[in-house]
Length: 96
Image 1 (cartoon, helix red, strand yellow):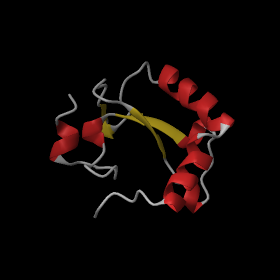
Image 2 (cartoon, rainbow, N blue to C red; image 1 turned 45 degrees about the vertical axis):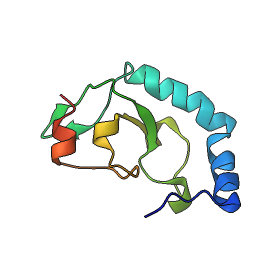
Image 3 (cartoon, rainbow, N blue to C red; image 1 turned 90 degrees about the vertical axis):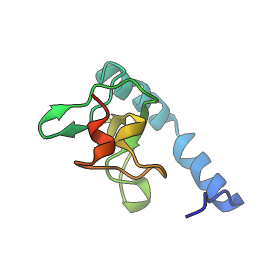
Image 4 (spheres, rainbow, N blue to C red; image 1 turned 30 degrees about the horizontal axis):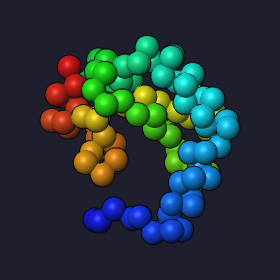
């Protein structure tokens, strides 16, 4: 699937990621996680610092919020190549 870089998508991203609540809680989520991945695989936390990003557990487009309880920190291995989450995969196993 090619990257959606349409003007409508860029405007939507600006609304979501430019929101003051998201910016504030993004920093708090990273602080809460100690700057490490919060992905759990088999009950063990990843803890990688490799290209971490803040992820909405329930997407804003699906009714999720920017509340701190809906944000988690994931490394690049805990997310797939297009940003989808991986669970129990070989990619997630490389986090450790």
